[in-house]
Structures are given as structure tokens and as C-alpha cells.
Image (cartoon, rainbow, N blue to C red; front, top):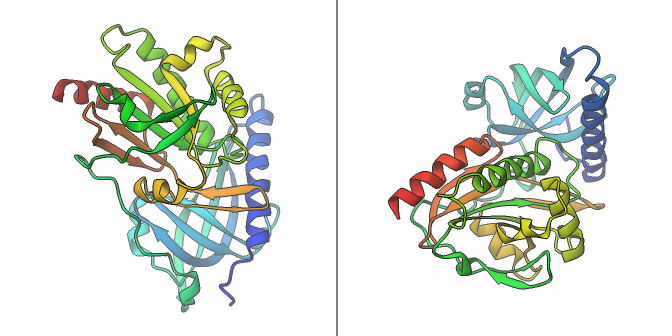
Length: 298
């Protein structure tokens, strides 16, 4: 079995899967809510234990997708510790309107993963108490801002790009930030002491005009006052590698689609990491609890 992934097939497949999930979300509202299931056969290429995912080079899945490498959540999460790169597996792909994952994963063999396809060395992981560099950004108004200017406030940041087609990635974290924005507005104790910042790692496309429109769309409002407490900004291309390294962001762009990890951080009033989240296993309520705890500790 060849383990060398076809990049074009993977990116086309990711686009297709995103569209497929969105289509299910709209079509299934008035029909059955039962998830769809497909049989997968493939080889584990790499494992991300923090995110609870494995990149799998799957064989064609009848009625679902062609051969490609895809990141899959594994359920139950404990199964992930039993896998290693090179494992040949069978599993059930479970697809719901807004998510997909693997269940009933069984190892049927093992083969050697070429060194060129093994995961890169571990990224830097933001640790509590670590000072955040003063990265310079350009916000939705075309104004240069920097992370250190928010010292004295609790700063919540999440990394996104506006064209992201996958409901459980950027759209999900932006939705959670919208919920937090509403909660913060309604709480005088938090208002004025907490700032939200959605940062794009797609600076070529995500211009100030695009970010402004995206912000209004996320908030469901066209009130410019939104940006006094929730800003949208892009990291300049020259700073992107250092920025991505600090926040443990992995990304790769091909044919206009960016495959990427998720990274969200709570930064305390002194400009240090209070808590960092890898992946999307958090909700607005979790970050609001962090905000309260960070305020109490400051």
C-alpha cells in the first residue's frame, strides 16, 4: 500500500466534505437526525493526541469520498492511545450535519510510514505564565494594533480564516466568540475589562474590508460599536511563521484551501498565557469561567 498522500485529492476532498456537511445541515433539519455511517479502510499517517485526531490515508469510501488523507476525531478518545503511525485500520465513519468522526476502530496490520510523511517535530505549546510576544496585527479598520496594547484587560484570542468551509472549525469558534460577546455585554463586571480578538492567518485574502464584513456576520449586527470589544485582525505574512509557532498553529494552503489546527488562548491582564486550548473542545462557558478566574487572580 502506498502511503504517500495526494495533496490535490486531499484538498478537493476537504472542500467536498465541507460542502457535504453544510448540505446535510440544511437538508436534515426537517428529516431524519440519524447520522450516516460509512465503512473506512486506511492507514494512520500521524496522530495528534492534544486534538484527539489522527490523519488517515483512507481508501475510497463508497458513496462518500475518494482516496485521500483526512484528519478524523477518534471515539472513544481512549482508542487513540492504542494507535500509532503505520497502523492499517478499519472503522466506521460517522457523519452528522456539523461533525464527523471514526468509531469501532480496529487495527488489522502495520506498515512503515515514510520519513517524509511522519509528523514534524512538536510545536511550541503556550504554557500558563508564559509571556505573549508583542505581535503586530492589522484590524478590521486597517489600523495597526499589537497584543501588548491590551494589557490591563483579559484578552481572549482565537485563530481563524474567513473562508474556512468546515462547520466544526472556524465557524464554530466564531460562533462561540459571538456567544461570549453577548455574555460580556450583559455583565457590567466584565464589560470594559475583557477583549475578544479573532485573528486571521490568511492575510492576503482577509483584508480589513473582508474582516469587517465577517465580524458583522458573526455578530449578527452591523453596529460598528461591536469592534470596541471584539476586534478582527490579520497577522502580516512576514510575522505569520513566528506567530503560528508560538500559538501552536499548523497550517498548509493549497488551491485556496487552508488545512489547519485550532488554537484559542486566554491571556491575563499582565500579558501572559492564562490558559490555552488546542482544538475545539471548549465552549463559551469554559472561557467565561477562565475570564472570571483570571480577573480574580489579577
